[in-house]
Image (cartoon, rainbow, N blue to C red):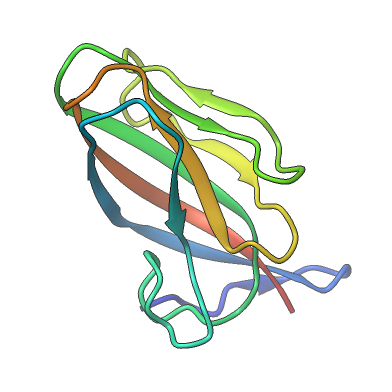
Length: 123
């Protein structure tokens, strides 16, 4: 369950979080979407219902040789998390109104775990 976190003067709250939010394997290299949070609290970050505006993610490759790529969606910041950098946390800005993280695999059927180390919500 997300913790409250610390508020900034701009009306943003950093929420510390340390957990796996997805186990990802796809039989294609197409674009995929992970919903981070939603009004019902059933997103990848369980229990979060506030608007997420940035997320710090890291990946761990379980099986495979390819890369896990996080990329822009409607204006989000471009970030790449190469397969040879496990546990490297990258901040990704989430596009307004989307509540989602877009990604792709460079090789089919690679198995990845996606972790979150914290995120920022609107206050």
